[in-house]
Image 1 (cartoon, rainbow over the protein chains, first blue to last red):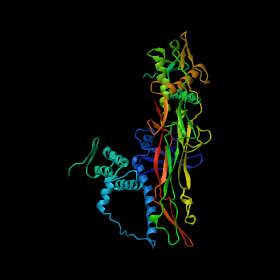
Image 2: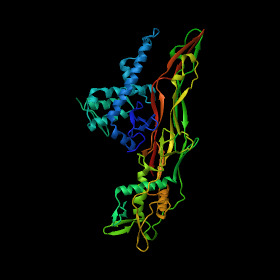
Image 3: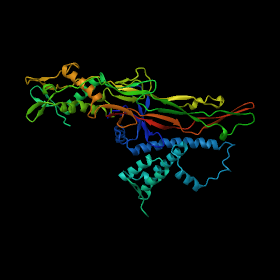
Image 4: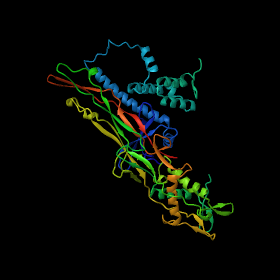
Amino acid sequence: MAYLWSDKVTDFYYSNPESDTVAVLWTDPDDGITREHYIRVDEEDEQWRDFVAEFPYEEINRRSDVRNENFREEFREAFRSWAQREDVDFIDPNSTNKFEDVIIDFISEFDNTDAEQKEKLFKLKLKIFEQDVVKDSGSDDKYKNAKTFIRKTENPMDALLGYMVFTNDAELKEEGVFIPFK
Amino acid sequence: MTVRTPVYWDGSNVVDMTSTHITQWKTYIAYLYATDPTVTCSVVSGSGTLSPTMADTRLKAGAASTSTSAFVAEGSTAEPATVTVNYDKITGPTYDTSLSGQADTNNFAFPVYRDGNNLKAMSLTDYKDTFMYATLDAMITASESAATNGTYTISTAASVTNYAEASGAGTAVFLDTRADTSAYTNGGIPETLDQPTTVTSYFLQRANFGRTFPTQALLLTDSSGNLNQVDLSSDTSSFNAILKNDIRFYAAEDDGGHKLSYNINGSGNARGTAMVDTRLNGSGNYGTRQVGDDYRSQEFPNGSAATISTYTFKIVHV
């Protein structure tokens, strides 16, 4: 295997909420500069297969989680600073949003062209991957396929269906998702 | 498909070449191709035939708001908007179709292999499978080396060892830009709306590895039945010239599914880095500035960078 990044990788992570592209940081020994190299997640592509052969999905997930957690902490800090300002009013008297409405709207009216909604989907996926039942699921193909399914899905309903593979013994099939009665 | 194992003279016997020897020959043939490729891509100023419109997007600040009595509230100031710059700077693949393949002259134009206890000259089909197609297969791998000589890739550096930048002038085929958040300050309100910084430049590169002659000579037979070793020290010796002609011919004109081609986001193997459009994903950083009775407010780009679109340059046989 010979790529510009071979043997020079310093970090890697999913670079978007859809988790369909990985950013690989590699340091050029000739000039000491760290550069970005991007690979689209594509099992048909030789470069991607070579990359995951060396850096498995679990490690990409882990590093992505670490990076996203850093961003979340920065956001929390910024939010705390903002919230401590005297002119901030948390109560929106005009809000009519109910919890159940928010959930149903998010699932049934999801728009994957909307950056804000895509970010919410990304956070949902992260939350799923943070669950112990997912983290501790092992390397069985059933669970690996489910993780890939969740990673690639473009709507919250499918993400939750993928999650049910871990929680409800659901199975991903060619024709859809099989969910057993409990 | 019949891939033969060529033979060579080891000083006392005619023996089969090892896989290492054969790889050396394929790498040498790739080098011959790289000296004068027949499938080329070039960098143009616009309207390239290969690249789809590759969009680089970034956020710019919303327009500033002013009031003589109080700051315009965040909910009423203009939101950051998206700026889009399209790139379409790769043309190709362009095929040189001026060549003809070497014919099987007198049935001994091609190297010899062992058939049981006999030595036979390869047929044209054997020769194509053993040398041309095997070399062209190695040339389209995602992993790059001297075996992929003469083919193209994408890099984030203008100068890369063993590669020649396709434009010859360091012209990027795609720029990924983002809003330069450090350029927006409250003291500067009203700030210039679009203040970008280039995050990554992407360059089209052609592999240009040096030559290494194979260590063992192929054997050819002649009309008298003699075995002759091909020249190992000249690219222009008669058989090496045939190899060069034919790899150039089959790369550009093969009708057996081994012609070289390139695309963006199509089928094939990714070459080099994918080109990505990244953009800050924040909903706006609200800033204010008061100058006497002039209350100014403006929303600046903010957030963390996320990949919006991915463009992968690929090589494939057609």
